[in-house]
Image 1 (tube, rainbow, N blue to C red):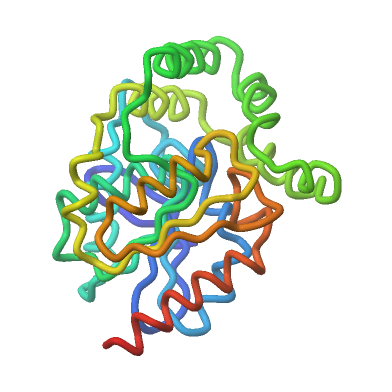
Image 2: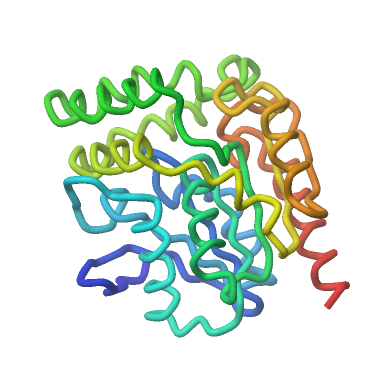
Length: 268
């Protein structure tokens, strides 16, 4: 991993391959390893950039509240440090999707395409806000193990649990390895994030919306409505996957992303 110094912070960032830049943004409370099944595949044809967000993975610890806008500003600064001048295709999952929408709002000129995975545009309802604040308190008091125990049962589709225990353990390891203060700061930031629904009709870059068929956290019907609000967006459901589609069904995920990128290339 490269060490990136931006906004007076230090980030661990995967930067592999050459060509049109493809920026992967992981979800909560994970790391760039969410994209381990995508990075080597797409680095053969693109410059793949996959940062650990602040407070996660190999990036600097943080505390307080980190907003989705803060994370988007971090991404722009990371691209500057890496001298990425061409517009990027940004692929974000869950919290990474919240960040992606802030990136669209603030840095549209740096964006070539958008992939929104297992995410939503709406703000949290009150009970979810309360739960996120409880997670922030829990992780500071007891560490990341209880957070993993609380999150994992809803993260995956039944086939993943039954047949791919290594995926469950990989995600568990990512959660446990996260910095507690970073997890708390991001949880608070998600709880207080604004509703971005009004942005959706204004998105004017090619957009792919992906959801796992068995996702109970951001269900397919909700994501279908989100995709319908984005002009020209494609909507695709990945079978045999829950909320962690890139790891649960990487072959299907990669095929959809490849088709999307190829279509963008063909359209110039």
